[in-house]
Length: 107
Image 1 (spheres, one colour):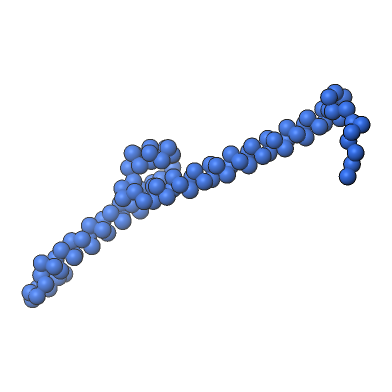
Image 2 (image 1 turned 45 degrees about the vertical axis):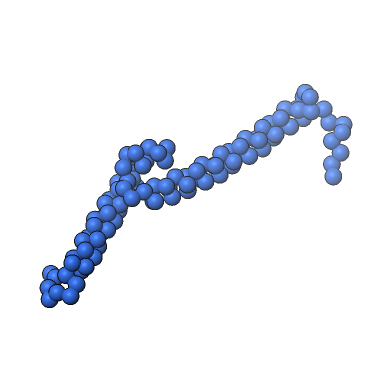
């Protein structure tokens, strides 16, 4: 281990370099922490958006994530397709229930 007891960190070149190194380390740590927080927050927001039945402006606003780009458009289109598929499946189930036991041909 290096003995630093005789080095003057209060002023001079050693002090300047020591402060620069410490600032760099603190800044790097803060950037890493901020990045990790944003990553976790983004995962939670994405889960909330995925759980929403309809992707509306309110859903995006509640997620505190108001971005208008190709990804949002794609998500919106996927949700619309999913919603239409659910409607069709519900109608088919209802028709099957109503026509159960009858000789009806569905097209």
